[in-house]
Image (cartoon, rainbow, N blue to C red; front, side):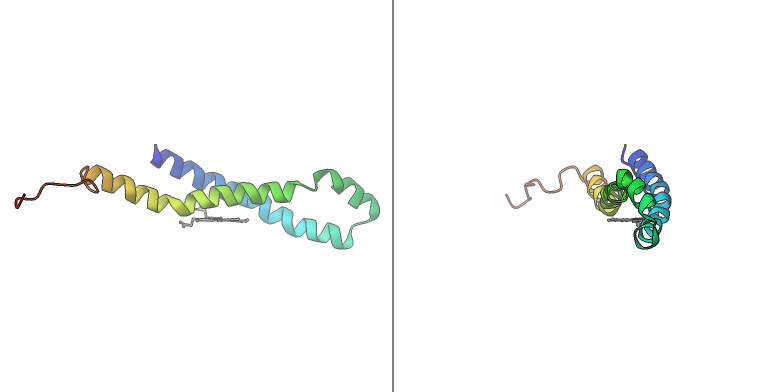
Length: 91
Ligand code: HEM
């Protein structure tokens, strides 16, 4: 399951990065040099860059945590008793 999520979250992050990277400089140009009509038309789509950044931040945070999640799962598989109290021969 983690493998599936890892593959798709990476693909998702990579593909959403393209419109994000294109849109943000475009918005700066529109805001700086756009005609009043263009600025009025843009008003309706004003939330789009922040929305894309939020999606990137959420998928990026998951990608950041992924190695730690995989490590924890591997540890659980290899040593299911790790973390619980084990009896020693001295007991
Ligand atoms: C806003 C918060 C963001 C966070 C927390 C974040 C985090 C990450 C992380 C942790 C990775 C994986 C690195 C690795 O393990 O190799 C990654 C990959 C990447 N990020 Fe982001 N990122 C963010 C935003 C962005 C933005 C705004 C862009 C571009 C517009 C972007 C483009 C990419 C690309 C192209 C990759 C490589 C994906 C691949 O594996 O092919 N990220 N990011």
